[in-house]
Image 1 (cartoon, rainbow, N blue to C red):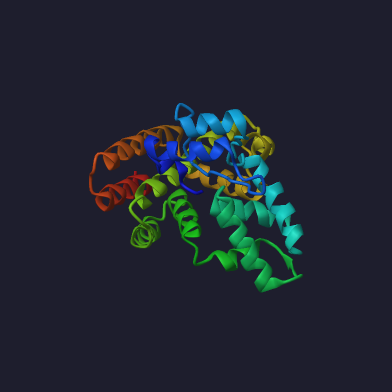
Image 2 (image 1 turned 60 degrees about the vertical axis):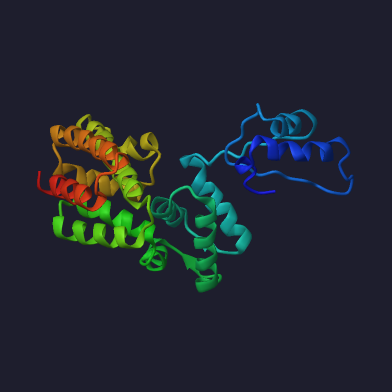
Length: 249
């Protein structure tokens, strides 16, 4: 029974009589993204059945999951390629599994490295967001605005907030890389930040484009834009101005 959390309290109560005498040969599973154990159905399940919370994988567990899943498919993919896939797709396991399936269908038992993942990812929306952060970090305003426009055209109602979230992550990484690089701790960056070496190398190069004062200011601007987006301001205009300010200062 999916989307159980959408049932009102009175609707959930209709299941209780079944739980008094459930069919022995049936497994009945209620799936919900948000559980309130004050509701009688959820509290009853937790008391007499089993309640299991499936938490999202932490960043440091995604690549091992990708490698293990790829092995089950018979896909020979490198550790670095899995790390790259994680960076452009995120932590959504359904989307990650789908990308592994595409790679498996296309390449079969051939070894798969970063370049093959990049070729598969060129039309992915997540890849375009990844591209956007690269253009901004390189202060290439023209390409950044072109990529932003493409993302807003492709995306749904929450695309602007998704873009903002990715930018926030990128600039926080740059901030931390700046801090560690200034202290001569470059070799510790991948492990300390939980990012793959190829991404650490890219950030170490990109961070020279930004002063500490700029990074501090732009993180503040991201918070301001987030607030205005949630209050109903026009997302296209806000994000255009944000991208220009990030690239031009």
